[in-house]
Amino acid sequence: MTQLSLAAVLAEGARKYPDKVAVIDGPLRITYRDLWAQARSYAAALQQLGIGPDDTVAVVIPNVTDFPRVYYGALAAGARVVPVHLLLTADEMAYVLRDSGASVVVAHSSQLRTAAAAAAQTGAKLVTVGPLPPDLPEAPQRLEDVAASASPLPTYVSRGAEDVAVVFYTSGTTGEPKGALLTHLNLVMNATVNVFDANDARVDDVVMGCLPLFHTFGQTVGMNGTFRLGATLVLLARFTGEAAIDLMVRENVTVFHGVPTMYVALLEAAAKADRLPDLRLCVSGGASLPMAVLEKFNETFHALIYEGYGLSETSPTATTNQPAFGTRPGSIGHAIWGVEVEIARAEVDERIELLPTGELGEIVIRGHNVFAGYLNRPEETAHAVVDGWFRSGDLGTKDAEGFITIVDRKKDLIIRGGFNVYPRDVEEVLARHPAVVQVAVIGVPDEMHGEEICAVIVPEPGGAVTQQEIIDWAKERLGRHKYPRQVRFVEALPMGPSFKVLKRELRRTIGGQ
Image (cartoon, rainbow, N blue to C red):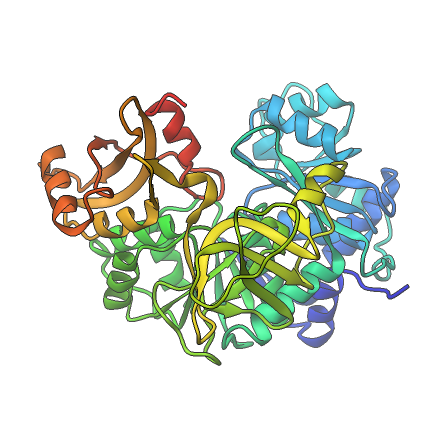
């Protein structure tokens, strides 16, 4: 069996760049040597708590240094890691613990109340990291204290390349979240290809770590990619545009990874900032980036955004705009090294029928990045992976030069009076209206047309734009079957923990679905 551990990402960073700063967390500057030593101490502590190979450790920690300490510590002990979204309720968190079979929950002190309630429901052992709040009636065992009485592991426990390293819980639009099983090979390869093949990352880069580390984008592309490269990661626990700009300027950040809503927030904050960071490389993923945002960001920050694409089930990166192929704004670029991305007939479930160049269909993916399946869900795994291809659920096209463009999610497609309307087409137009800060387009039930098009808009503060103005603007620029007949103004769009717009919440609250 081929041996490979994701823990090697940090171990090799410590061997190659021992004295270099790996993490900046507020006033803390932690070198690769020290971070790996701390992770090995936590690994020894977890072993004392009964954790060994194939046991599962749930991690409930924000973007602070304890996240990589615990993450790589659990991996070094040979365990599986389950990163837990921080916005879950106690009942939702308990579901993740129960479904994953987590025997230990490591919770940062700031997350203790919810984690304690969830652990109590499942019988998992709760331990904590970080400074304890003074008003806590009963303090759980501290991982730091256990580590202090144990000798650090000399190195990480051997694992097989195809063993599961991390279980990501996918949010999904219906039903319960599913645990996507990512192997050591999946995650080591994705981090490696992202930094050495997909872009022009450099070892002297300083990378902004404001994407949640519990999310696949922030974890693999941000944290693992940075450590695989030997660069420096600057952590920000609570993202706002203002806080991000201030921190990037102060720490001379050169690389920014974010989802589209973060780029919108940076643009808003830039209008009031005295100084902007000198960014060299920007990467967007998680959702489609409106062209209007890309153009305005380039104009404001003088930095080009490389848009990419992926899912939890693909480790996550599947495609990205890459210097080797040139960039095309509005596209998600080319498949990364070692991965194939094609377009298949969306109406056929039981087999993969690849479509000719230029035709619209479902984006399908195969390669080293495709996950090992859904935890304890063989039927859903069989539906998702057909003939070796992962079915993404996204609709797109591939042109003669290999550039892939997402049209929309299959589930977000609006069928109005028999005509297919892709929300992204409408959002791209509305995003260019000067009074629109953010927009999401959904279908709402309609007796005559089956579904009607509804634009949910966050307007410019203090603006006086009306619903009719928005409708007229869209009517001039879109086909008669495409422009929205309904407009709703809101103060903010509902966001998930990874800062993606939750269209299912909009459909529920506005469309009654």
